[in-house]
Image 1 (cartoon, rainbow, N blue to C red):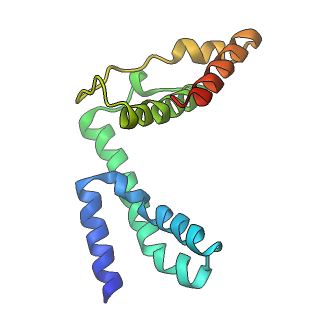
Image 2 (cartoon, rainbow, N blue to C red):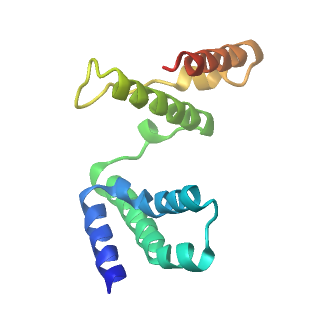
Length: 141
C-alpha cells in the first residue's frame, strides 16, 4: 500500500517537474553509497514501476515538446560533440551559479557551441579546448 502511494506521489511530482523522473536512479545511488552494494531483490525490483513511469513520462514530455512547443528543427539538431560540450558547460555553469550567484536571470542566452564542435576534431584546437576545460576544473569554476 505504501509503495502505491509513493508511486502516485512520484507521478504527481513528474506532472509538476519532469526532472523528478531521475529519482529512481538517485535512490539506487543512495542505496549503493549507504550500503556499498545494491540488492536486486530489495532495491532494484521495487523501483521497476518507478523506472517504467519515469521512462514513459520522459517520452511523453519529449513528444509534447516536439508536437506543441516546437522543439525541433535546425535549432535543436546537435552533433554528439555539441551535445557533450553543452552538457559540460551546463554542469560548470550551474555549479558556478550555486556558489557565486551573480547575474542571475530567468532565461539565459542560448550558448553557441557549433564553432567549438567544428574545431574539436582537428589537433591543436582540440588540445586547446581540452586544456581550457582542464583549467576550469582546476580553478573550481
